[in-house]
Structure formats: structure tokens, C-alpha cells
Image (cartoon, rainbow over the protein chains, first blue to last red):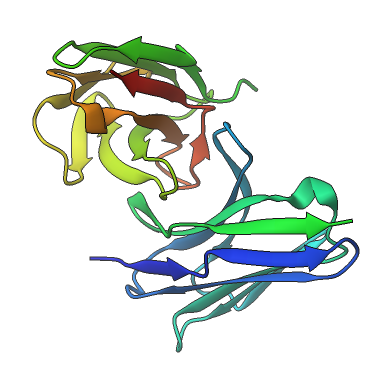
Length: 108
Length: 112
């Protein structure tokens, strides 16, 4: 089955760019997703990319997909303190398969 | 457009009891799935319902069961609660044609 891996922690300074990386094992996912989870809350859909795309940009967010290496990344430009949260990447084979999440800490 | 809603927000039960959690899917969505998120972990898929039929299940025992109703809302039932069932339970809905999943705020269950 699908396995998704992410680094657990990332710390950046306010105004810098953040890059969160994710690797996955199964390339049959139709979509690949990034969700944001703030403390005590549910998952907020940030963005998603269709599996036949290489890149998607949405305001401060840029998603890169390297299907050959099975690597997905999320770049957040001009990171703000409000971006501090846990970020999950996930693949979809009908249901979603998630990694353990990357905790992003933004220092003022 | 109404998003995914869940009730209750928090719940405390004792070991051996039964619990029912509820989810209303986003308007126009006919597919609902449930996830368990233990502390410090990513969400784990429990099962999925499409048009009132279960059409996918994760690695959870039969004491986790569910229903989907004609209005596409859903219930998650857990019997014989165990301490390890303490978690955030998330419901997500999708339109079968788009496959984009939207999550509710979750129900936090504590089993004592």
C-alpha cells in the first residue's frame, strides 16, 4: 500500500520562504494534497495537484511534483507567524493516505 | 455553501462504552470517509461510504462501524471502547466526480 514520509519539523524566520518535502511510494494517486492543521482543529485543504501536473502556484503557495522521484513539495513564500501549524501531504487512492505531518514553526 | 460539520466537538467516555459520532457532508457531496488521528500522528483511514454503501475500509476492527443516510450525512459508531480509541475523529466529504476531500473540524474523544 501507499506510504508517505515527511520530515517532522521545520523552523523558519518570518518573511523567509518555507519548503516542506514529502515522498510517497505509490504513483497511482489521482491527486496529491497539502493540508494544514492548527492546534485542536481539523484539516484545512491548502492546495492539491493533479498527478499529471509538475507545478501549481496559488498565491504564496507553490507545489512541485516530481513523479519520477515520487517527491512532492510545498513552498510557502513570505512565511508569516499565522502559517505556524502542522502540514500534511497526502495521496488519494479513493481514500487519503497521510504522512505524519511536518510541524512548521515561524519565528518573528 | 455549507462546509463539513461534525458533532459533538468533544466527548468523554469510559472503557467498554459505545459512542456515536456524526458528520454532515458538504453540500453536493455524496462520499464520506472517516479518519482517526491519534496524538502526534497523521490521520488513519477508517472507512468510506458512497451513496449509503461502504466502499472501502482501513485496518480497523469490526467494532468500528458506520452508516450513511440518504442526505449523505454519516455516523461513526464505536463499540466496546478501549483506551487507545482516544483520538481526534475526522470526517471528510467529496463529490464522487472530483475526488477533492474537505474535512470537518473533528470530534475529540477521550476514553477513560
